[in-house]
Image (spheres, one colour):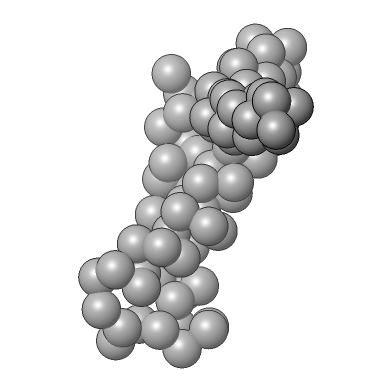
Length: 90
């Protein structure tokens, strides 16, 4: 639980600095939200691995990350299988 807390707090601490760095601190909610998904979700996952390593739990967090990535990629695999099956029938 400590690694999740540390990673989350670190992302929150660097978020506003990042927005100021790229000049979107006054942007709308949706722009910040999309930037958050694109930049901070991977950053959070990387920080989980780093803090997990320092806390002696790297293998747990590495397995967690692999499951997380598989879940994210699953819809894309299903879509590509549907497209390939449709092209085979034509």
